[in-house]
Length: 166
Image (cartoon, rainbow, N blue to C red; front, side, top):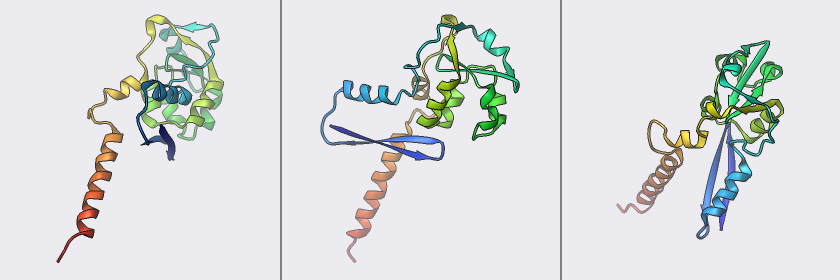
């Protein structure tokens, strides 16, 4: 069985996993679906937009963004955005999945975003999911692996210090 904890650090949500035995890929997949980080469960409005249409809505008075192949009219949200309106203006009228995921928005932020959903990206303009994009990051090393290595090193140093004779 697997235990998962969500730890919120500023805008970032980190999933901590503790193993108490073997898990199946189905269990892991079910947990990921419950998180719905790619907002795949967003009910379709039936409307479909080309990226060219999204690009036309790039001003503070009329702002759209595409995130995870969904189109959002965030015009009414600009003044409420905790990160400020500048970052929204920078990505107005664009496919902004990578920028959205790079910040590490919380599940509450993802839920809030669903209020501004207006349609889906046209099949010709769809992108790969951010989870896959994150896997192909520059370093090639996941943050979880780095954290695990740091914990192991700290434990090893602590063990050596505690057992040092002399």
